Amino acid sequence: MLSLIPTPLLQIGEVGAGLQVAPNMMRILTRWGLRDTVIASSVSLINLDIRRWSSGALLGEAPVNKSFGEQYVIHRADLHRALYERAVGLPNVRVRVGATVVSAEFGEDGKGAGVVLEGGERVKADVVLAADGVKSRLRQQMLGLQVDTPTPTGDAAYRIILPRSAMVADPELRELIDTPRGTRWVGPGRHIMAYPIKAHQQYNIVLLHPDTSEGSEESWTAVGTKQELVDTFKGWDPVLQKIFGLIPDEKVLKWKLCTHEFLKTWTKGHVALLGDACHPMLFVAPFPDHILLRLTCSRPYVAQGAAQAVEDAATLAVLLSSISDKSSIPQALRLYQIARKTRAEMVQDSAMKNRETLHMPDGPAQIERDAKFAKIFGGGENPDKWGDPRHQEFMWGWDAEETARRMVRRGEGVRSML
Image 1 (cartoon, rainbow, N blue to C red):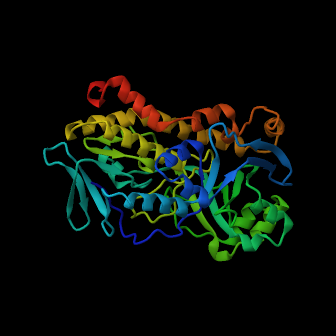
Image 2: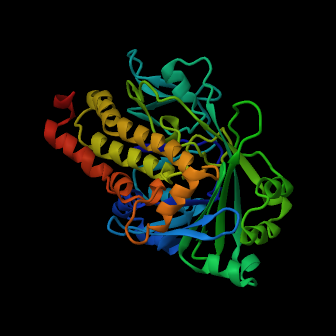
Image 3: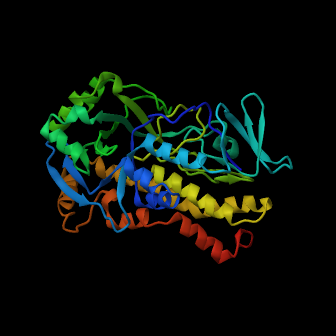
């Protein structure tokens, strides 16, 4: 039996904002029987418009490469709900709420694996999969870290969702929410990504900017003011200024973007980390830090956070299904690390490189970059990794489940491969 053990979470609510369901992720969700559910509440993007920060002038238009599949965008809560309902609909899944996991037992001392809850209760398990996010307690325990301090990237982000009703009266804003395209404004030290979600009923906007706060604390609940946002993006596209005018003061939340060093291991005994617990994707989901079960958020530079967490889960499903007895679980988890660690770390690294491209200051290098943007539609190189065909091949063409199956076939079982 598979037990998911989050802390108090009585229902799936409207938590978070938009995320991109990239083709490598949608491929897996389709096999899990979620395609129709995801499509019903999402938007399939046809292209990405790249605009200059000050004037909004169109620098380039990058059509979505559909040879790998559709590029959907969805509200995070809709995806959470779809995954949750699919899981609890299975006969061998039990969801327990009101149970805070404080530590794991790795099954290496003869006592067996499991988790310890607040209050001292021990829950036995054959395998423990720790998806406890960027502030992972079990990562800290697994690696023996006294302090697990993230490294600030120098960026922070505002996240905003506007309802359709706020935008349709203005022709320019109505076009933004009516058209299935993403829009990226690029400027010195900043960029903005926006697209419609919820079948064009909401408009999702993420605004990346220099982080002026002190310390390295990662927070999902920090509140910013509308005036802070307006001042941060003063002088940007007049269309954006219209959008800013629609933002209620109480709706401005901000997140500090941090990164973590690559981990030396993702597994120990019968316990494995996945998602942001082992490969934080810079941009974390806005859940309180006591919730254990978390879906990684879409990262703001190459939009792969959620997809990489889903690839982790799919890989684990294949490998754990390939073994015939409990004694092979540690070997299966080590193979999971082999299958996933290098890829996830390459995705992490590509995000920081794309940050440099998107946040380039005005000058000769920016002019050269913008000249490349202008040639994208005709098949030219796209400096933005998200739209670059070679990068899409690496990012979107990957099939996590088939990769895991090939590893099993080559080794004729997990036991013989390790």
